[in-house]
Image 1 (tube, rainbow, N blue to C red):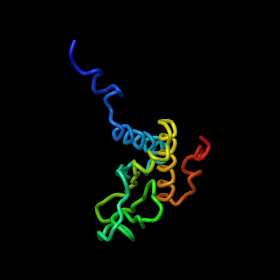
Image 2: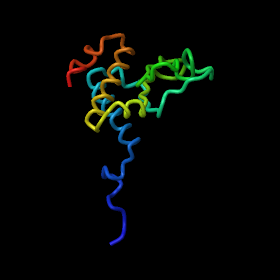
Image 3: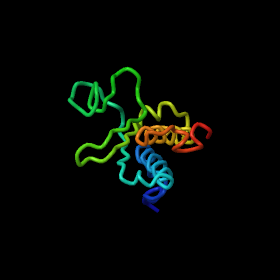
Length: 133
């Protein structure tokens, strides 16, 4: 019998990048149930932060990275028609996590930290389980 080992909807056929996007979206959905105002926030995944003088959205580069420490995520305030945006950087997060469970926990912590910045609250106020899982 010839054909794919597993159908497309089975995790065997999901790439690491797609799996990471799912982790970010799961975390965002979880927080949105508690904070409905997050429904208008754009949650985005980028491979890595960039630096340079590209005239981007923040000091030091396109995404505001100064080139010193490597950020795991970033909050970008709304401008014009663009909504508030939370960016999670996949490669820096993956490097710091040893396995899928650690990666899921770290993704959630980074999302909580960025949402806390957006809302002007402490991460523990955004998610009472922050730092305890």
